[in-house]
Picture (cartoon, rainbow, N blue to C red):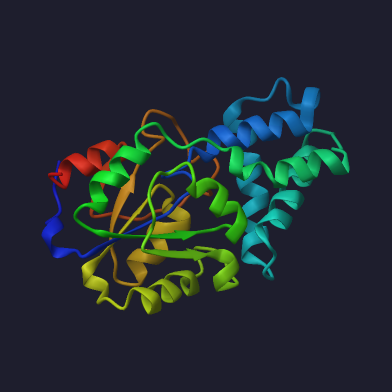
Length: 233
């Protein structure tokens, strides 16, 4: 496995959902609750792909809070299966982000990495929803950039450019760590960042809850524990 020179970096920036938080497990549980029996026969991957098909176009349009993105996405997915969730069910789905679990290796890996690097997060989420998730991560980030603050969603470069302003570091000293090729690696590489792909779906086919995309990260790891090990912490 090729290894980056981690001494070349002062800061690590992270995607949150899919990388640190197990958003596919969270999305699936919330989708199945919202849609009910209409999706009983659907595979997990079918549901995740349907979600990606609605979420990404909504994020690419005029800015909406992430709760609204989720509300419209679940309504669209449900319609594909002939279901019409109640207003309460839609609201529960939109607020479910705080219930999405962290991956089991996340907190320990972040704690190890924070002994050597300053840490930031660039997340496609509202401030309050990320705040609920952050309590599961066991670390105080040095910088937090949300979609709400940027007024846009990755892969829009504005989210990264806002992070650059706040970090105040040369881009060559920043290493971006993320699971989604579409949301993170494509724009990060275009902006000159080195990247690590945390390939959480390495044992599964397809792209799950993210649209397909092509990107060439500098390093690929299966999980956060491996990343922390490679950084020799």
